[in-house]
Image (cartoon, rainbow, N blue to C red; front, side, top):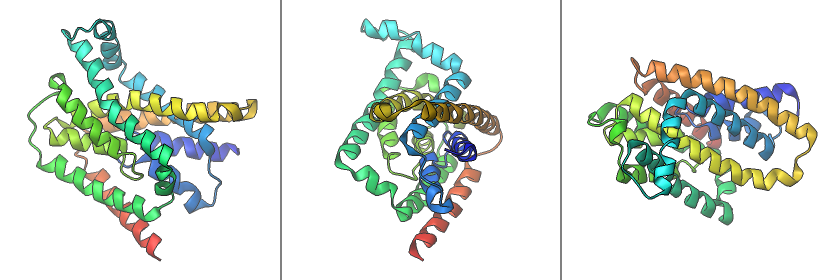
Length: 268
């Protein structure tokens, strides 16, 4: 694959993965809008690996905190904040895994990926829902109070993100804001939830593409992963800093304009 195409895919994935504007929508639309060939599953797996590296690096303190709770969790003990965080992340991942498996086995996921009108509608609609949650919710809790019930509910919100254009980070931040979490804590929880989700999705895709991998493709994948990791780390850092003084409204405006444009384009 041409290096410029690899870099373009990696930058789109890296910049949009953790911003609430749907990375999947941008990657699905790239071939439709530019005429470029679809990047294929191997590159998809690679850029997701890159974003995984970025989020784990950026939130390493929280990741290490959760990992330290796994031994107690294995022993059936939930007497520490660390073990409760680890269990919350597991619980929050289950709905998306189950829903994703159903969509994949039924073939519905491929049908949805091909609908520009659907992507436009979800970009616009869930953008407005994000605005409502962000501006109307009262901040009443913090990430240290994240409960198992809230983890399950956020997992259901996350499962909705399997509909192209929804945005995994956007929908989970929306759910967390509705629950009363601060902007920063809602974003942090959303990013931590992305880690097991990306691992699970990446592992599933990796099984499918393992038989077709070769040296040239693996080199392309490594390049894409590196660019995705750097761009994701930068985008994530900027968003978290901006949340100290800026709401999610700029992302909502982008979603509404982009979504409306896609709907019009699909109708013409």
